[in-house]
Image (cartoon, rainbow, N blue to C red; front, top):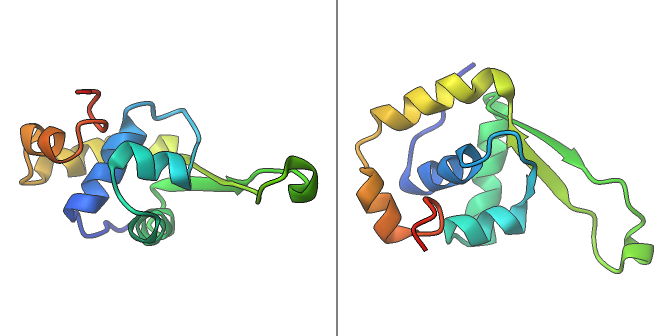
Length: 109
């Protein structure tokens, strides 16, 4: 397992996912919670999945019947939670800075 660059957007995404590590979230939910655009989130999710920190799955619906496209759901790989926690602890960005930049991430709203 490698480690992605821990940019601020990557940290925000990881904090969102760590807020409830067992919960599956789809991309737009993560966007809203992290306060980031879809074009920022999806490459991060792809990188996190590539290094083995995330698991993903496509929902099984009929898009025509549901009236919307299928969603891809993401969650932390249970085996990576300790690694993610450690990586977040090593980052230079403080929790206060993250809360100021995106209060939803840490439940400050």
